[in-house]
Length: 321
Ligand code: UDP
Ligand code: MG
Image 1 (cartoon, rainbow, N blue to C red):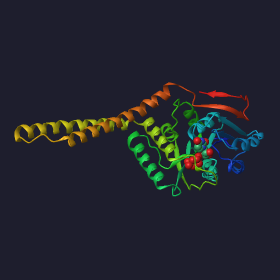
Image 2: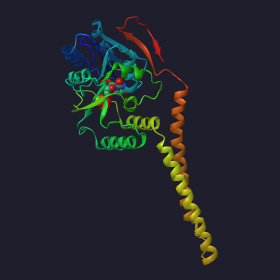
Image 3: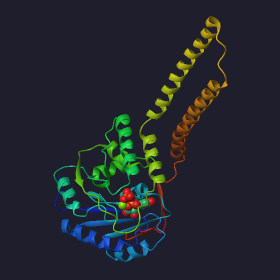
Image 4: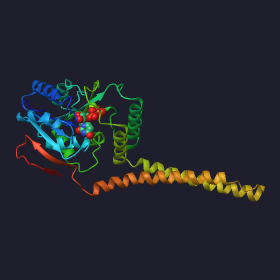
C-alpha cells in the first residue's frame, strides 16, 4: 500500500488547446491539491501551432509544473509516452486537456490505487456524442482485437487512467516505436480495474482525431499485436486454390465427357480480377507488417524534445531514446 506521503504525477498531452488550456490548468491544479500536497504536472506540447505553449509557460513558475515541448506533432500516444518517461511520481494520472475527462474522477482513481490496484482506468459510458461511423468503427476494432490477440483490450477504455510506478517502469521498458497505448496497457497486465465515466463534450476547440488518423491508429494497433490478418489471407488463398482445382476438373469433365463447348471469356475475366484483387490485398497487408518492421529496425527515437521547462538539469534540446 502506498504511503500517505506519495507523489502524484499528472501527464497532460496538448495539441492546439489554447481556448481551454488556461482554464484546464487552473482546474487541474485545484483538483490535485485536494488529493495531495506532493504533486507534479507534466504538460507535453505536441507541436501546437497556436498559443498553447505561451499560455502554459506562466504556470511553470510553479516548480510543480513542467512543460515538455516536442519538436513537432508526434500524435497523442507519443506525447503521452514522452510525458510518462519524464514522471517521477508514485502514481501517474493521464488526462486530456479538453475537459472531456472529468477531473472529479482523479480522487476516485487515487482511492482505488491506494486500495492496491496498479492500474485504474476510465471506461466511457456512452459515445453518443460521436458519429455513427466512429462508434461502429470502434466496435469492429475491439472485436478484432478481442478475438485475435488473446490479450483482453477493454472496450471503451482510453488513455484516461492512473498508473502505478511499476506499470510506468514496465511502459518505459517497452522499446517499440509503434505506441499503440490501449494494447500496451492491456499487454503489461497488473492488477487493474475499470471505472465508468461519462465523456463530456469538448469545451472548445476541435478533436484532432479525424477518420484518417483513427483508421491508421486502428491499423497500427492490429498489426502491432496480431498476425491474424495474414493467416486469414493465407486461408483465403488456400480456399481459392481448392475451388480452382475443382473447377478445372469440372471443366475437363464437362468438355471431354459431356462434350459441352468451353465457357467464354467472362468467367476468365472474373477469375483474373478476383484473384488479382485478393493478391493486391494480401500484398498491402504484408506491406503493413513490413512497414512496422521497417519503423522498428531504424531505432529512431520515439520523440524529440525541443525544450523542457521546469525540470532540474534542464536541457535546451534532448533526444530520448
Ligand atoms: N492531442 C495531442 N496530439 C495530437 C492530438 C491530440 O497531444 O496529435 C491531445 C489533445 O490536446 C487532447 C488529447 O490529446 O488533450 C485528446 O485529443 P482529442 O480531444 O483531439 O481526442 P479525442 O477526445 O477525440 O479522443
Ligand atoms: Mg477530446
